[in-house]
Image (cartoon, rainbow, N blue to C red; front, side, top):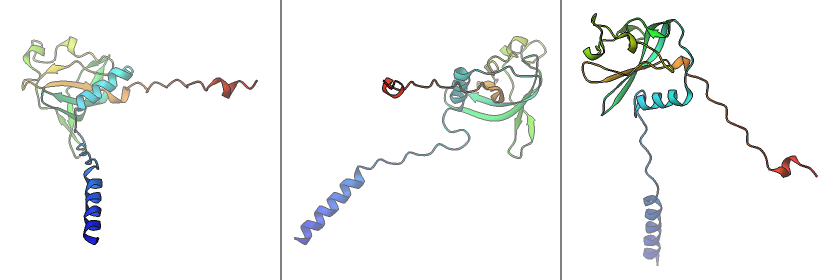
Length: 163
């Protein structure tokens, strides 16, 4: 009797553990998933306020068909346009000039980004291709519009009407 009881207990235990769902792997911090898609979706859903003149913090997104990477940076803005060189933030908090170059198709005769591609629209720069084939876009995250307030649902009539 004891061997049968032991077999039943072990089968029951195995069945319980076999049906538990495996834990999902956690996304790596700072760049797991498709960071470009996350930022783009957020800005398209909420919109953004006008970006004022001055040095502004940005999210620098780089993407290709296989991946996206996002970095912290800053850039000068004047009149709703990019005016200075893009800088990327380093791990120690310092900034260095962004070292990738825009493809010649997006440059003017002086070798800088064409005027029409400097506009900031809805808190985002234009998407442009770099010489290495990656696509870059800047997000001015501090000017993201507030999340819309949800409408309050009405209670049933019995909760409001007493007679």
